[in-house]
Length: 441
Image 1 (tube, rainbow, N blue to C red):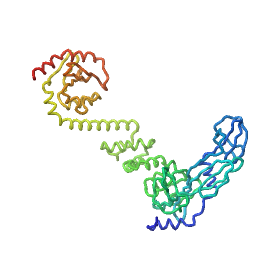
Image 2: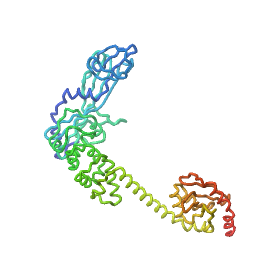
Image 3: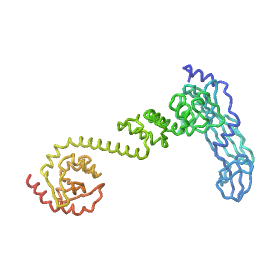
Image 4: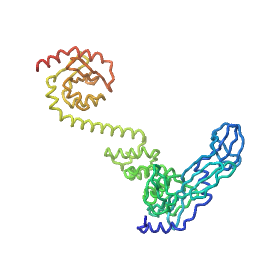
């Protein structure tokens, strides 16, 4: 891709004459980023694939330490003569006032009797009895200026089922950024790094605190709010707000007020979620009374329950509004049974006489009697609500074809202690229902 903007031309110019990374940086990547193995035979002969040292041990452990090079090794009991490990790592440096992140691929091949191959891909070839040789292959370079603007120079990607398939003989050129290069740049960063002064000025302390370096640097250079939190050493808050930018936009003013009131936010995720819920409920998030609760967890649960109830009410009203379209059809079909009510002195069973009542019954009892039109517009059944002292107990479905109760359930479709009495009460009054049917035929 040809450089078109002034910044792209600056990047291409700065890219020329870039030196290889240091040997110490390669050694760090080899030691910290790759897996390290010890091949062990049945009789206990163990070979360190890092330095080639061989020793005999009676220990039956999954891990060991090489007596010679002190490398921590993963023991593999095998007769195999080769293995391969691969990863990526990054090196931070500065060049001509620009922040530079260089991403490298590293591979370690464990083989016996294979000569080292010289290439710019980072590889470590191992064979028994010899020390490993290390090489690296650079994949991408991220350039960032003091305003947080980013350009990427990288090798060309090839078609394939894997995301990190690169053309080995392609040049590192200016290219469009994509998820592959971004993913590679998220791997571990060598601690031997150089950072431009503007990043140090904005609160960087040499650690990334669980945030991808490019993401952190860009946020620090482009967002004064992130810079403020970094200088206050609130790294957990920075991490949360970078991951949830919507929370930052909604909560920033409240966050500043909480700081001025010396309010300690111990759980930033829950606090930000709580502030967003206050906004949804129309509360004043400039008031310390709301944004600095003594018990955040209790207040979070309370406002969450209020929102849940509010949404449930809105859904109920919407269902009722839709159901009212069938009200005339329901009355035409079931009006002859209106007024039916039975009681034994304790239990009162009465018919649901509107589509709205069906919906409310279903919502109150947490079952499906109010959903859709299966019950209210079913010509073969009528629905009763059994109550004691105006409290719903069970919902009854009476079949007009069989002339008996076919379903009777309480809250969440569970039977209550009055289950049998309710069924007997309705079935014993089936003749009253039959009379209504005969009178209208």
